[in-house]
Length: 369
View 1 (cartoon, rainbow, N blue to C red):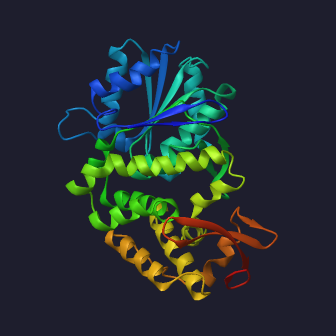
View 2 (cartoon, rainbow, N blue to C red; view 1 turned 45 degrees about the vertical axis):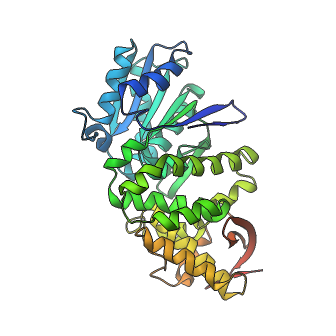
View 3 (tube, one colour; view 1 turned 60 degrees about the horizontal axis):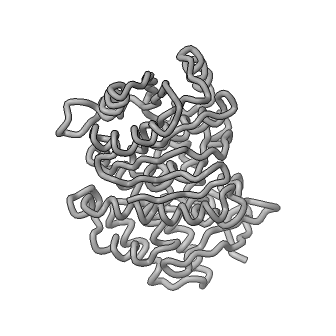
């Protein structure tokens, strides 16, 4: 399966195929075939400690080793930097070490960076690519479901600073995205559930058929029924994001609908200092709570609230916030979508249809206006 995203910096392909990044044949057919169209000699792989040691049960090599060896066999000079898995590696203080390493390895603007990992690796590698030598091409090879359906597509890159997450960033699209759903076989259950929250989001905002198919095959772990359909699930999710990004590449309006559930979700993450809920878990709660809020103000039917709650629970996600929304107001008030005291909230009034509504953020509540 293949999508082509039109960006101001140029078009790029999103390839979704089992084996495209975990088998030498797949790497040769897609990645190396692409690299041969370029005039480059050096490749810099950025990955993390999990991906550097994980691999398919059918392979004696880790994901990063398969990629590294395949590229070397094709004649490329390959360097690999392994960062510690986890959000802490995305802090801005870690950038100088990577920049220095790129310089010492003699990486030039004609060479390429490959981001092999989840959202942290993808965000970090993308920001490094955007800023090193004022811009070097990079390829996304996402290994988590969340990264495959969300962060690897669309060109948003960022690092964290002491004041908060993703506060320093750039819009910088990859040259290619390779999505191999085989890697999801080794994904921890909690990370699978987190990714499914974003998939459910896509169904809610744009694809009723996707939502209803998820209702039918739902499970809180990656069973065979879900795995067999995973290429299609990822394709449909990426297709929705592609269409939205093409209409609003720099997040000035319509792209905001991708933030359904994120405003309350980000508030919840921040309230717990990013130590209790991962991103997908927080977004799941955010989707439910904003929909419940709309129901309390007679804007949606109770049936929608119940269906959303049921599908979240089906995939092992919590729906209800453990703290009153009023306690999150201070954190929500810092959201980038707040302007002059008003918040742009993303609301799904029926499955597959989304709108942007203004809400008033007061000291202890959020009220649609």
